Image (cartoon, rainbow, N blue to C red; front, side, top):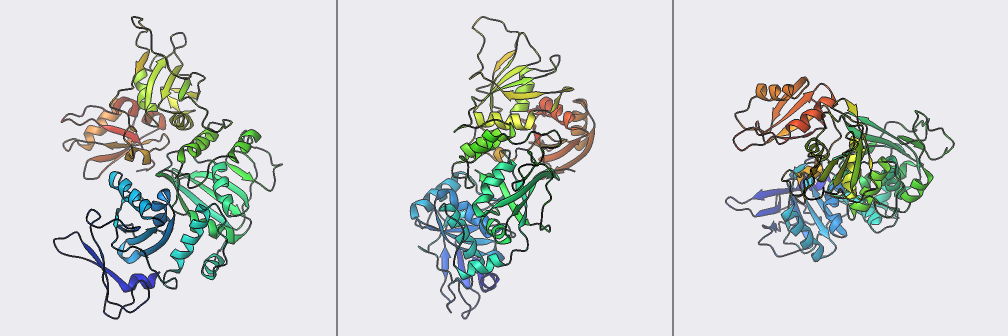
Amino acid sequence: MESIVSDVAVGMKRGSDDLSLYSTSPNSVTANGNDSSKKLRVEDRMESPPSRVLHIRKLPSEVSETEVIALGLPFGKVTNILMLKGKNQAFLELGTEEAAVTMVNYYTAVMPQVRNVPVFIQFSNHKELKTDSTLNQRAQAVLQAVSAVQDGGSPNSDNSTLDSVLAHAPSPVLRIIIDNMFYPVTLDVLQQIFSKFGTVMKIITFTKNNQFQALLQFSEPVNAQQARLSLDGQNIYNSCCTLRIDFSKLVNLNVKYNNDKSRDYTRPELPAGDGQPALDPAMAAAYNKDSSLLGAINPMSAAAAAAAAAGRMVLSGHSGCSGVLLVSNLNEEMVTPQSLFTLFGVYGDAQRVKILYNKKDSALIQMSDGNQAQLAMSHLNGQKMYGKIIRVTLSKHQAVQLPREGLDDQGLTKDFTNSPLHRFKKPGSKNFQNIFPPSATLHLSNVPEDVTEEDLRLLFSNAGGIVKAFKFFQGHKMALLQMSTVEEAIQALMDLHNYDMGSNHNLKVSFSKSTI
């Protein structure tokens, strides 16, 4: 790969958006390995005719082949790739021109991102991508492994290039980090995804630096290498739950308990430990029927499976959930429909909220769909709100009924269907990529220019709690603010999200995975 990068340069004409890819000298080696000074011009996508070869620009410097391939996977088969890492660019060839047109049209409406960095995609003037495998070995090996999985087969191959890449596997144990964890990712979801590449022996999951991580051990190092090449940079679900995979320094995992956080598949007799229930057999059976990586292609049933596991539900073909939640052990002196709408709205679009007339420490919340309900349940069950640990479960009700016309229910029921404050109504919204568990650190946005750090510290202190740390970024438009406890942060979010800061600025508040 590096030999391609050193021999290819990218230039831009002055006063034009046209890019040209050309050899650095008349004797330079082009991407197909021949001596040539032939220019490969890539014009603006609105002027270039459709082609199944796409030019991708402004990639992060540390981007992997798998992450570039993942951009095209939801639209069809990816047949070739050329990485220009030194220039932060790549060429991607899809199986059909129709797939490429669909991909460009989609990413015209929804800004594509790689590692949270916007990238630019346009048609190439080339109708096919010709690469010399001797100069492009790693990318071709990755493409072959990913394609095999996409076709529903095994990434095993007689190809000598692939074999040589796979041979350098230092350990059967992988370290896995999940970025942008919009939906819960469970031990069973990981087992199902990674077992495509070989026998998964053991898994340990944990949270470190506010990120969900896992150690996963295969029976053979070669299987770990296959999985890493194919899955690193892939999204488990659409635009979220991105896998970051590397080899662990460990060569063997010592698992003591079989429960929600760790599993030794070679020793089913291990105790659950720590008071955690062992996996319900019905749930395990259901997992074998559902979900797959490249659930990016059909994410919702897979997401329902993941969230259902977090809620310890037995699965059916779909989420089996109406979207209505029952929230109990509320502080009835403090709770309001608006506060519940704001908090649960972090994880989905809450449509209706009803505090029960005869049991005011309980409420029904109707989310937009079952997946949002399960997501909210998995993040908020067991959190502390107004001094009490709340319980969130799925309700048997199919919808929250509004009071009959003329009946005064003391304001206990609110219809938020047409609220302008829904975070997820807009398809492709960045809010989908920034959903995190409740944390003491809050992300603030839409901050007016004349508002100071002291103003915001005072505002959040008055909401009840202590502001421990603060930091502006993005040119004063955004900030991170850390309360002393998660409970204080939850209360501050409920009180101050959409707070009118003046100058037509309403403060936006969400939980952050960062610390200050």
